[in-house]
Image 1: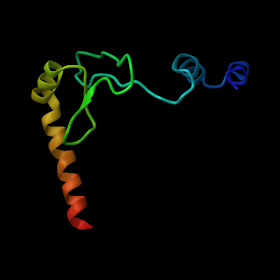
Image 2: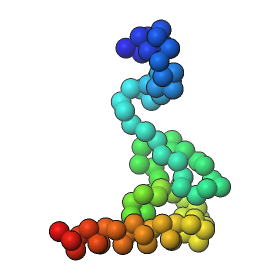
Image 3: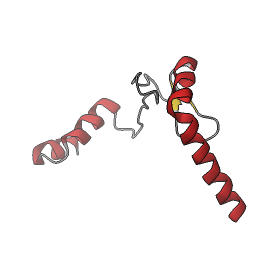
Length: 89
């Protein structure tokens, strides 16, 4: 299958991802702090935000810096949407 994609020239990024990732469909996450950019070396290495689950952090310091910089507002909005959806149903 990988050879077919490379021969046809379709989606070379998908070919590279399949070759590097072992073809198991798992994707490693990046640290959510804008100035970090560190990538996980294994699945579930980074911890996620316990409220919204959308942010992943490589360390406590990245989490604290991103909370002050941006995630506080994003997380509050996500939590409000979740609670509103729960109350509606």
